[in-house]
Length: 111
Length: 101
Length: 143
Image (cartoon, rainbow over all chains, first blue to last red; front, side, top):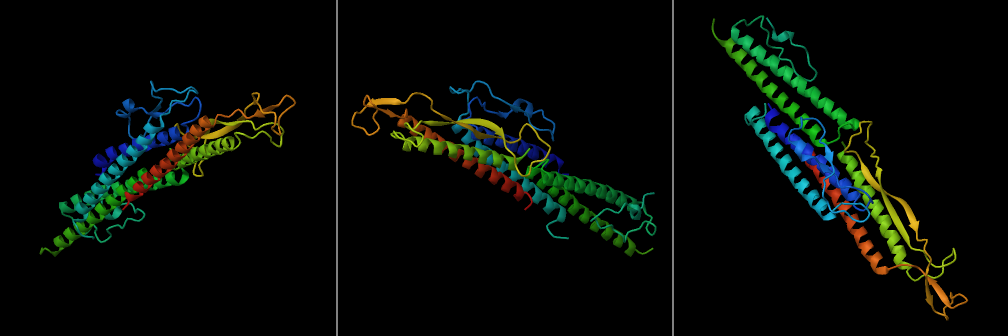
């Protein structure tokens, strides 16, 4: 009953949450020599089976500093905010769905 | 013929004990009881999913809170639905019983 | 996967940047120090960061690729180069030839580094705040 609506949204939440963990890791390692920025592999994300872990990749082509680190702190800070907002939107949508369903089930009154 | 009273007792789910098909034998009750059976099975599955999710959360295996919250809500909604169905079934049974012979 | 673990990752980032800032501040404060208890002028210090696995109290044996990889100060390196010599014959620390040994520190460089450390620190604070927000939104699902 809840399967259609929430499982897509739940998968979206999984992706956002995984991405945010990587952003936090990138930010912590913004000055670590040799550290490469990590992100979610969005290509494989579309075809991923629900319940499996998203795969992590190191994006190519990022400008690298002398010590081998390629983290762009401004970009990561922007991603941080964006993931947070998207997560908020998705949880609000889920809450809306749940309330609707509950209304429908209990027909507006508590049994 | 499956009877409502032969449904397995499931923790925390009130069994509609007042309904036995020994007294009501019209085919309408079979339909009711199979709806109930399905509903009970569904609730039971979702409840154990929710329990498993909470456990994973507690042991740290899966500690994204949103997965656990969603599992709990699904099971809660299914339970609400079950309660409604049960109420309707009991109501219908009572209606049937009021009918003159 | 550990959303709570990422709080530990960010905390490690804050820790490392703070240490870095402290070392840089020490450099700046001692940019002109010609005499130290060990003898000789102050020698500039530098931090070396390295990625490290960060443990969270709620960790279990179920590890995954997304688990805590934070940062730590692997070592503090001390400048081994010969100190800068300036000709100041009247200086109390002047040697026989009138030269005084000064630390090799470029204050402008270390100031910029200090600002970067501060920025890095604040970014980690923002990460903790964002993750905390997401956890709380998750709880809202139950409301």
